[in-house]
Image: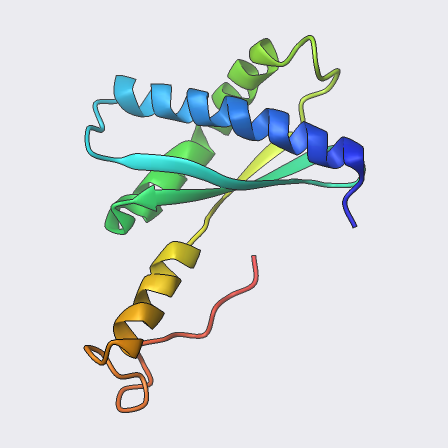
Amino acid sequence: MESQRQKKIASVLQRDLVEVLQGAAREGGMQGVIISVTQVKVTVDLSIAKVYLSIFPIKQAKVLIEGISSNAPIIKHELAQRTKHQLRRMPELLFFIDDSLEYIDQIDRSLKGTENPILNDDLLQKRKKA
C-alpha cells in the first residue's frame, strides 16, 4: 500500500519527467516519437523511483529506453533542479517499458479475428512482471 507521501512524490516526478523527456526528444531530433510517462512508483524509503514509459512507435521503444536509461544521471540532475523546492533528495530513477497499450492492441486484434491466438498461441506471449 502506497503512502500519501509516496503518491505525492510520484506525481511530482511524473509531471516533471514528461517535460524533461519530451524536451530531450525534441532536442534529439526525434520527430514523430511520442514518449509518455504512464506511471511512477516510489519505494517506501523514497530512494528508488520506477518510471514506466509508453513509447510510440513501439518498434523504437527498446533503443529509446536504453538511451534514456544510460542518460538517467543527467535526467535525475534535471529533475533535481526542477523539484529542489519540493524534494530534499532525488530518488534513483529506473526506467521500464510499459507495453500494456501494445498488449491491449494485440488482444483487440485477436478478438476481431484478424489474429486468432487459439490457432496460433505464439501471438500472445506470457507477460513478464516488472
